[in-house]
Image (cartoon, rainbow, N blue to C red; front, side, top):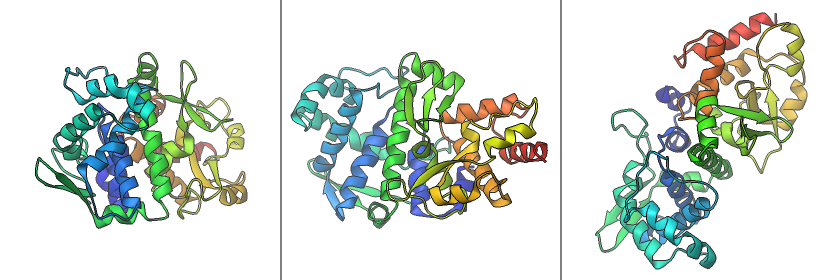
Length: 337
């Protein structure tokens, strides 16, 4: 299915989204690295010393550590583990606005051996990598240099850089929240809820905000409006969250247990497109894009995937076979006449 996501739009952007949105996560290092890489490439650089890349990498990690765990509870970190060092140096690094010498040294030691080896890996695909590479580590152990590829620079200098940035931040927030005691278990077992007034996804038990709806799902629809399929850039374009099946259609489903306010039916759109669509039924193209978007989410780790699995199970489908979302959506359409 990750192959289908890339085939739909075979670009470096899709490779980046495969790495950031669909990779396995037991720590959040990948997000800190992605953030640092985008920042360096946005300056137009072709290479950067590992030391200079490690600074924003380490600082962003300790800033997030102040808010939530950055590793699964299953991770047992030793005394020299980078995460253990980061926890010990977090307060001073945040106070300074720069990583301490000890934290920087730990980051430089761990990055080439861990996150930089795994960033391009596809989840569960036997060591396969995303189709585009975004950096190469060169040099010696004494002075490593990170070569930034043309693919990365093109992304970081493109109009979609802002979208890729908010997608990364949203995914980071979702993953770190899933690591948190209590909240994380609820997210992994029960999936997420949606606060329609704030347009945010929340955990079901405490209703704590996790991420914006748009930021959490737009990458899975290739950064495109669900209605017109053109690029949609949060912070640049005016964005609305569309009920693909309009909520007013609920009256056509008397007694049916179909939640049209759930994440499966919500998709970012241009505000103008959403206004013109109004309460009209979705087109075949919109339904096809929604099905593909939902099947892409099913390839990401918990908790978004769990949310969609539970919806399918509730309506008699197995949990995650390719094509089930199209069948489910067609079933809803038939019920609505």
